[in-house]
Image (cartoon, rainbow, N blue to C red):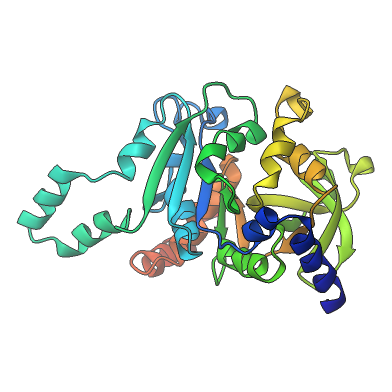
Length: 312
């Protein structure tokens, strides 16, 4: 592993001072693309964002934000669209509710409400005027990111890990100072749903990526390693996204930007420790609710007994 790491660090240092400075920074900003329409959950998402659908007692977007916060991110950038105001309201102060809870001496609930947005966390909202793809959504955050490494989290993918998945990836970024993509082994018939990576194995968790293909047919997939909804990217990806032609589905694909970035920077795929729930699908959403309810400290034991009593 060391023989791979040393030349890469030297290439960063020899390129230009600005690039070297970028790769010495910590990951403190994250982009959350939340402008999608959530059509797979209609009519539930007709008047509310899909990211606000609750899993047990928290909306999907809160799980993603808490994961980013646990990884050291303090600036949360939400790329929104129309009808996404409830997300802004969720992370805003609710004065009337807090006063009512305080007057009722419901301190535990008050602490829960206030924990949604810690004092040292900043939330910024950027409008994506047109739904032109994930790559375009990430590009909408460029001015706020500047010349810093950043994370991208897709709230549809609820990730459970110990430590949290993004924290695992930040640890990898701190070691390798290069873009890190979360990946998992997918079934061959599901490669059309993912960006699929191929590359050289570094260790049991890490792959040095040399190719990435967006949603290939099973017979065209270079591997079965599919990119999950977590990324740590260097700011060089913005130029690559901006100069891409529209890709699969006529959209500006993040995968295509990363594939282009490979020509001049290292990119690694990281097999994360944990579990991903595809909450963009009804089946994955229901699985997340059941499994997280079973581990919930308040309702877990009773819910487990209830499930045992069902005649399935």
